[in-house]
Length: 483
Image (cartoon, rainbow, N blue to C red; front, side, top):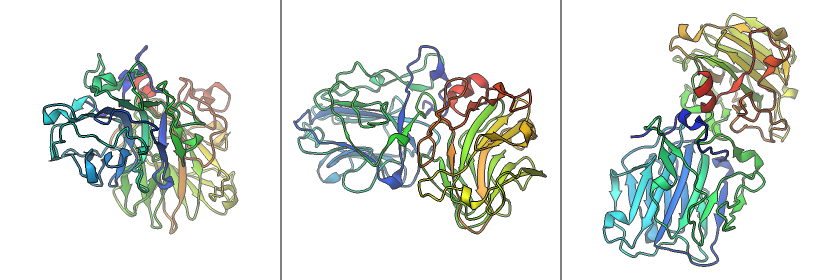
């Protein structure tokens, strides 16, 4: 089975097709893109293609729907397709889809005119046909589906009948009206890394009457159709802050909902917003671990009801009595209410920054303070900034070399150790979890990421001489600069 793009380093090859944008679907917002055809297209022959990075597991998450015609991730993390009346399931995979760190490419190919029953509905994941199903019901030959039907709403990543919606990121959504296309029309195996399935340019395909192509390239109109048909979709509960640069050709770090220990944090905004439970000593880590290189990310101080920590750790917490920073080779800011905003103390392995409650985001639309983190794993130092102001006089805090930690790497990590739930928003450069848009839009030295402050502070006099050109934590940077 080909890789599901945990880090598509091969896509960084010069001249390779690059996907620039995706759309973040934040499930609690009930986002939706929809279009109701004004005329019939082909109801027997069509293809859906989309790249998906899941944000949550264990819930119904639609790929598309058109009345009784649908495809979705089921609550047991299988994938289902239904095209017959009554909403019955035609195919449901035995395979589970439980990776929130990788991109999946899904193709649903329909041609009910085919003589062989097995050819009327086919499902492909990352270029390979799915053949093992818990449910496999033959579609009646020449059946006319609800797809491309006049007056029937076509919903993208939404079920159309309620509040079921995708959670995570979607890119390169294509509907071909009247064509049953092979997955090779949308993707290809990399010639240098033949287990990696990657996107290809689809702009030259025959989209048909109701066909469309969503590139998500216009942040002011995420429903804009790029097929040339002008089949724009109506946009609900999505705005410019939901346009992302986390894509199948450049996969960005997020926090990992599968590394969710002790009291159970909740995740939203494409797994870049973390709410700790009203318990004690929660601990969460990122999707990408780092071993070498220089890396940058930002964290917003959001709702603060007790002390919380954000920093790095070589592993997930293994004890409910630990908090981030309690143990050797874990390093964190400890953010607490009620003290000055300019304190910066290093005590043992814990670094404390105490911020008054007036400086945090109380979710009234005002942004909270932003902490910047500069992690230098070539020289084993970490630097911090508060609202763009470098702390500790630009002197890096020494950390244990990754090779000498328990697992040989560091995760980005966060948690709390108080009685109340805390909230924090992360910006790894792929899509910030602020409530307002990133205003500065600063990229790293390689042109990746979208940050509030400058990742490349080594070019100024802020840091000691060893530090320069910190980069966004994304797969194109991992491929060229270690990781």
